[in-house]
Length: 197
Image 1 (cartoon, one colour):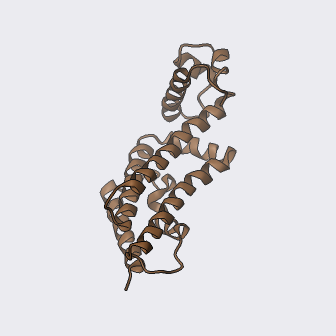
Image 2 (spheres, helix red, strand yellow):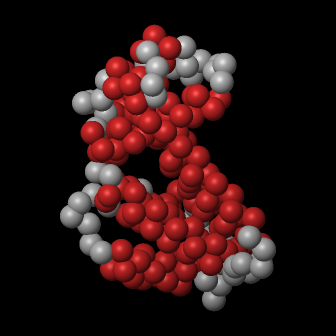
Image 3 (cartoon, one colour):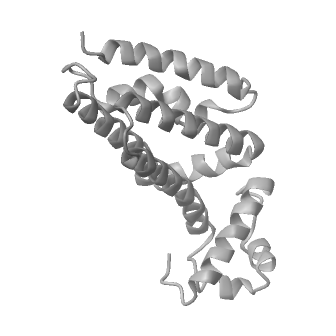
C-alpha cells in the first residue's frame, strides 16, 4: 500500500472494495467500479493503491487483524483457565466464520486468490492461531491445569482446524449450533488428554 495522503479516504476505498468483492466477486470487480463507488477517478484511486490485487490483500488483512484482536482479547482476559481461553477463542472464531463466510460466499474466492499471491498472509493468519494456542498450553502447564507432554500449539491447531479456518465452513455448512456442539466435543476430548492425572 502506498503511504496514503488521507487515511480516511484509503479506508473508504477498502470499505467500498470489501462490499463490492463480497457481493459481486473479486474477478468481476474492476478498478473503475471501485472508483465509481468512491466517487473518484480510477487515476485518483491509484494514488492510494497499486492495483486491485493490493486492495484485495488489504481487505483480507482486515480478517487477519480480526483474528489477532480476538487472540489478544482472550490472551489478556483475567481469571480464566487455559482451557476456557481456548474454548472461548475457538467458539468466537467459529461464530465469526460461520456468520461472515456463509452470508458472503464470494469471500472464499478472494481469500483463495490472495493466499496464492501472498502466501505469507495465509501463514500469518494460521500463525496467530498457533501462537495463541501455544500461549494457552504454556499457561496451562504453568498453573498445573495441563500435564507436561509433547503437545504443541500446532498440534492443537491441527485438531481444531475445522473450527478455526473458514475453508471448512463453505455452503452447505451445518447450522451453527451443530458446529458449536462438534467443537465442544472435540475440545473436551483434547482437554481430557491434556489434563494433569
